[in-house]
Structures are given as structure tokens and as C-alpha cells.
Image (cartoon, rainbow, N blue to C red):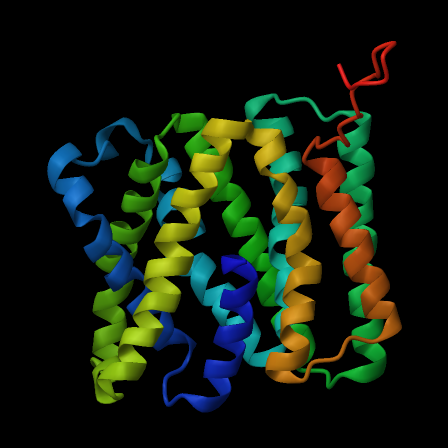
Length: 289
């Protein structure tokens, strides 16, 4: 819900707020870094155990570069396309990178799921050619880049065996260090020119919910359910984003787009390794075992 709501709300704010994608990224990581500062003060950051390429992948792939692509894509393309492309394509790239970099095998079920994801993205691109201006492809390219960047981030933290909060803190604080100086040099503290209420809303949406809380909640799910079962709700992200975008933004998907969303949902479900749980057999007395 946070991932889907973020895409819809950001698409809306980009059309109504005086702030642009670059400003929202600055707010995102300033807020997240402040929220994670108690953890950093207590535990520190295990930066020294990371190789330079891994550190770059964590800071850029899960931080400012990913957010610039994902948020910037919403300037050109519908929110439903963000939900349908960024996370599913990240699953495709992660599966391929994990296979070659980490030596993780790909089951037939996962390969079929990745095929569904690719076909769903192709359906969206085909629908776009018929009903949207050419600039929407800029958004698609940015979403694809965001998916690749987040895959690099995922593989990097798996390889480094980083704890969840450590990975998020490195990404947020590293993004502030790398991104904020050139941002302030080019634009100044432009986000301080908006009303305090809107600034608080932007900080809550981008930094509090999307960059911090969603990751914490997801990792609680992983610890209690296991990675495969916790990944099942991600299959709802494409359809959920598209459904929220209908009343909030008036973005009504066409039938080809709906088919693409369905293929993406099935693909993420299959690629995650999720399975439908069979009902327990009945005892002779007719009661469930």
C-alpha cells in the first residue's frame, strides 16, 4: 500500500506543487537520514566492510540515483506504469544478477515468472504507443533504470550480508552526503519556500513512509514469514497502483494495459517462489486435520 500510494501521491504532487522531482529527492533523504540517526549514533555504520563498488551500489542503487529515476519517471508517465514497471523489472534484473554474481539458481517457475513480467511490460509499451504522447517513453526508460539500480542495491546488500537498518541508513546518509551539496549549489534550499504543512506532507510521504517505514515493515514480514511468502504482496503492486490512480488521478487503464498489469502480477507471484497453500486434508470425522 505504501509503494502504490507513494507513486499515486507523487504523481499528483508533481502536477500541483511548486517542487520538482529533484526537490522531493532532497526531502526524502534528509528526512530518512534524520529518522535513522538514532540507530547510527547507537550502532554506527559498517562502511569499512564494503568494497567501493558495493558502497556505490547501495548509496546510488537504493538511494539518490534510484529515487531520481523513479520520481523523475512520474513527470512523464502515469503512476500505474511506475507501479507496473519499476518493481517488476527490478525482480527481473535481480534474478539475472543474482544468478551470475551470487551464483543463485533460477528455477523453472522463476524463469516463467520473469517471462510473464517481460511480456507484461511489453504490453504496457505497446498500449503506450497507441494512446500516449512520445514523451511517455522517457518515463518508461527512467522506470527501467530505477529497476536496474534497485537490483544492483539488492544484490550488493545480499553479498555484503548487511542488516536491514544498516543498509537503509548507509543509503540515506550516503545520499545526503553525495546528492545534497550539488542540489543546494544548483537550486538552493528550494523546498523551504513552500508552506510548512506541504513540507511536512512531503517529508512524511517521501522520507517517513517510502524511504523508511516501508522497508522496516517489509523486513518484519521477512523475519516472520520468510522471504518467499513476504514477497507475495509485491505481486499486488502493479494492480494496486493502477486501481488507486483511477479515482485519485483519473488514469483509467485501457484493456491492453489491464492485460499487462495481470501478466505482471502473475509474473511477480511466480518469480517470488510463492505457492498457493493447499487446504489441510479432512479426518475421517469430517473435521480439518
